[in-house]
Image 1 (tube, rainbow, N blue to C red):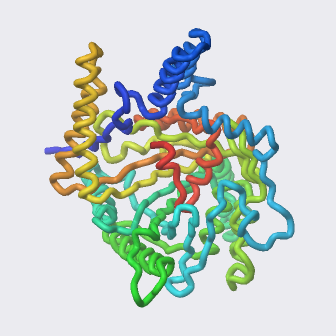
Image 2: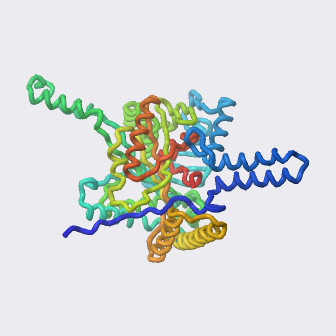
Image 3: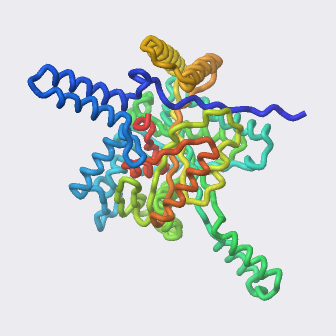
Length: 489
């Protein structure tokens, strides 16, 4: 008798609209255009001039430019155009700087500091002065998930869920938990060196040895390594200041240390292997290699240097060059293109539903999922408000003669199911997903993005490029605790 297959459901990511189902980005231009028309009709100006208001507002709300929605890209594209006009779209690191403070970092990374928590576990802490947050990073490895049975996969996901649930408690200082899975080809150089050390190359004339070496060369382009980092972000304003510390910043340091220690224990109990928290050298190496994978050998050798081991001198974790374009961003010698997950699967899926995206793409890419825990009380109130908003929206459409389509009915059913699950004690998280694809030239970048979009479609994910915001997508794909969750909401 076969075991029952566990199905996982995702709610519709689109929030209730402000007006007849329209989002805020769509409703505001439409309302603004109507106001322009109303004001024009009360002045001596020609009425035709006022008609331009609704026309322009409708075009901004529903129009597209080069396949991208104007309501999403108009503001960032205009900002990027202005930066290009004044020559500020390209940032070059000033020479002879020994630290990463102030103007030594590009605008996308301003406000970030890489600190050494020497008083605690020696972990690296990323401080975001703008957001008032502290972030620590763990390296996590799983074992045998793709080869496990469906029952075993469900058990592994249940363990991951149990490890995350405590973050959604009331008065939790944790504002976000993010996992970032970086896939990159590693080739066969290390294996070749091993074969040379054991003397295999000396017998290359033998048929069996020659066939084996040919197989190694054939598999070299498809040999991919996967590195997963999990970051925990604490907001300073959520931390209670203790009399022993006397400082909110110091209290936040201690709170982050405690949360990482407890989370590490829960992950170990779930059957995952956890290394870390990462040291400043390890974290700076991860940031630089993921920003420019073409320099991985050079960066790794610097990370193993005597100066790095002794922690002498400032850590160089920022890039040398950042040049932003509408369709990509150049960081040192690597092009980045970011795609946001616009919608999650609308059908029930199995535990391994992301297998195609995570394992079947040859491109160098980083899959980032940011999970923002929602306290139980606030989640219940938000679900109640959303039920009322969707019901009111449906009633208004019916009264005005509009049809309530199947997708809107499904959204109402999803939020009702969400309200029921919250009443049963399930924790809630807000999800934001980004896939950052990298390549050394634009042709390779286009091919990589095409492969990633195909794999995402097989995983029932809808990817949309972050046009004019690829620099922000690059930053969000780094283990720095800075995400696009609020700007994409």
